[in-house]
Image 1 (cartoon, one colour):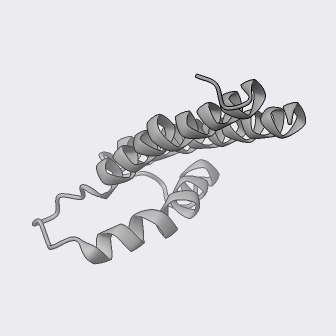
Image 2: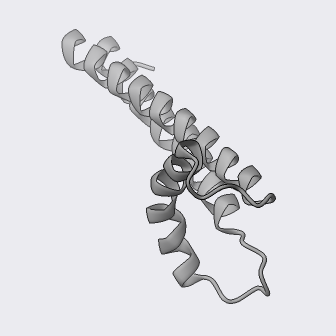
Length: 103
């Protein structure tokens, strides 16, 4: 069972790393939206391509707020929820597998 436990911990840590990186990509996208960036800049293009699929889906479900885009805030809350709940749950499950279910 220790191998499965270690696999769960590794997957949880990897997911945490991916979510951290995406968190900072979302922050960079939000910051860059405050200025008028060059749309042909490769960094700007990467930020838009990496975040628009997620932010666009959320924007479709939000009411019009007169130019205020709160979709990055919602994505940040979702990322933090996943980190605090799902990853913590995976690590707890791995610990219980390793210890045989004892607390």
